[in-house]
Length: 159
Image (cartoon, rainbow, N blue to C red; front, top):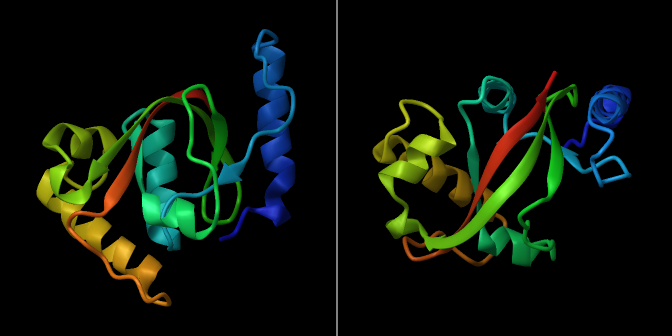
């Protein structure tokens, strides 16, 4: 995953601009920056959806968190969303986390995630393909019962 080191200056600039306008913010250090998805087209589209307030959730497999030994997100976490090239686009804040089996994801969640036509059918198709790609180098396989970490967030600072 590209954390945008070549464009880290844009991440710092966005964060400093945010702190100037929001001096009450309690997070002192620059938060984690990342892009959504595993390809340039989708990463850039998702960043724009966040900037425009359309994408207000994301869905990461619990498998991924365990596989890379990363802590689960928590309400109040702040992160910087970038495009594929690491250009800072927005700051988001996690509102709530739900762990839901893939086959129990709702139409409401799919719409909140805001991608494609916002339907559950579209969500299941693209996310199943994504999770399968994510797991391809490992012995584990995608399952309809696998747990998805549904992270709801709000955009607190678009560029």
